[in-house]
Amino acid sequence: MSIQEETSKRRTFAIISHPDAGKTTLTETLLLFGNLIRSAGTVKGKKSGKFATSDWMEIEKQRGISVTSSVMNFPYKGLQVNILDTPGHEDFSEDTYRTLTAVDSVVMIIDATKGIEAQTKKLFKVCRMRGIPIFTFINKLDREGREPFDLLEEIEELLDIETYPMNWPVGMGKRFQGIFDRDGNQFVHYSGNEQETFIPYDELKKPEYEELVSSDEFKTAQDEVALLDEAGDQFSIDQVLKGEQTPVFFGSALAPFGVQTFFDTFISMAPPPAPRKTTEGVVQPGNPDFSGFIFKIQANMNPQHRDRVAFLRVCSGKFERGISVKLARTGKTINLSQSQQFVASSRDNIEEAYAGDIIGIYDPNVYRIGDTLLEGKELFEYDELPQFPPEQYKRVTAKNVMKSKQFKKGIEQLVQEGAIQLFKKYKTESYILGAVGELQFDVFKYRMQNEYNSEVLLEPIGERVPRWLNEEKVNTALFDERNMLVQDREGNNVVLFKNDFALRWFQDNHPDVELIDLYEVN
Ligand code: G4P
Image 1 (spheres, rainbow, N blue to C red):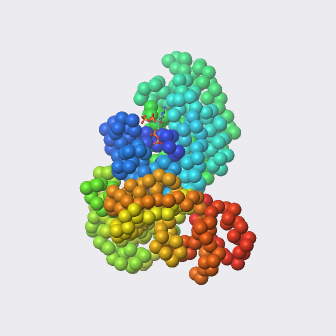
Image 2: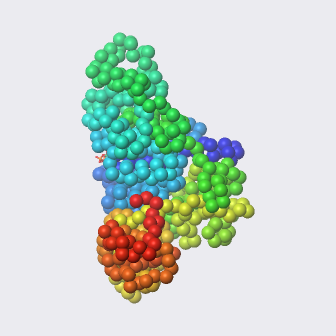
């Protein structure tokens, strides 16, 4: 099969949601379709003591949450499906944000009993900014939830995207009877067990369906569908692919009900890998030369292998085990002899991969997040990955000063992984760490101790507003603990302002000092 044909079969997506909306449950059901797990419930059972196949680290087990992103892949109906798992916990949104740079579409799960929640909104914003097509699954229809129209209105208003319901529910909770499949012109009957009965619209006249059809819920839903057909927005695949309209599916991930129809429709509409921007113009996925970028680095996924793995999204060409590639940042040639594809923690060596695939490559401590690897004569880099503003800052010191070597090594490596952001106080060796949330610090502390044998002390310095200074020369007299002068990893000067008020005060009093906000998402 040609590179082009292989590439066109790839469907690479992430599932985003607020914690507890049902991401794990939906993922489990999708893996069942892919025959990757024997029965639902093996991926995660928080209370039963079983853990998601994606919960690698001990700390994840202790807390019963998924901290790191993993990748699952399986063939489905002639296509190759790649699902990138993302941590739902808000403290890890930075990791999730970066994962979104490696996908071609996104499934957004909304809990029908709750509607749009904070985390969904944040993640949605990133997808929107990047123009990623978004498919919505409204979950938990087997529970008493909010009115469907109400939910659609909320999506349109809060997320500013047009909705197109692909199906429409009849009742909810105990009264939930199924969905009208608008595209398939059929009613999908839910009878409380795993069986879904597909009834073409013209067969609903049959006497055996009389009770169903004459119910109040059925009549109401029928009227609502008629209203949608007449007055609702038109479906537009162009708009969907631009991320301006979201197809909406109602169902229950747990039952499961409506999941198969959702997935089949989603997979038929979701786009294959698209051309991507680089510093030297656009690269086509079917381009014969291999190229890709690293969006995540992770250490010690398996305690038996104390190594690091870099996750690379293939963007063009064909990856073959053992190929020689160049690291665009340094121009150095590297042989990719050790590479894996993931089904969570099980590592299978892979022989080949194409645009859209995610591969894990052994990292002997040479890669950075955002690095481009490529074959061919040209050197280019994929668009820089966005950095996200930390919301919490802490000063970090080693408890035992005799162990400063391990301390520095640990910090260097964890920062390189992107687990946490590092600043140093201006021209000193005093470290300040920035993270999106508190839990990231806990993970940092835990990993420093367990992986680098370095006990650390963390002292909060509160929320800060970071701004970069344009000039290399700095008048240090302008800064103090309140407006703290630090340097980022590259040695650029940054001021961590105490709050927005302190920032404004500074701007008013020192209009000659140019301050830059480098973060893409605020
Ligand atoms: P998450 O990964 O997005 O955090 O959510 P997860 O799938 O773990 O689901 C959160 C809770 O919601 C789980 O219950 C799960 O069983 C339930 N759930 C998911 N989908 C549905 C659905 O379609 N209908 C109903 N009624 N419930 C659903 P839990 O009691 O918190 O955990 P567990 O002990 O069942 O794992």
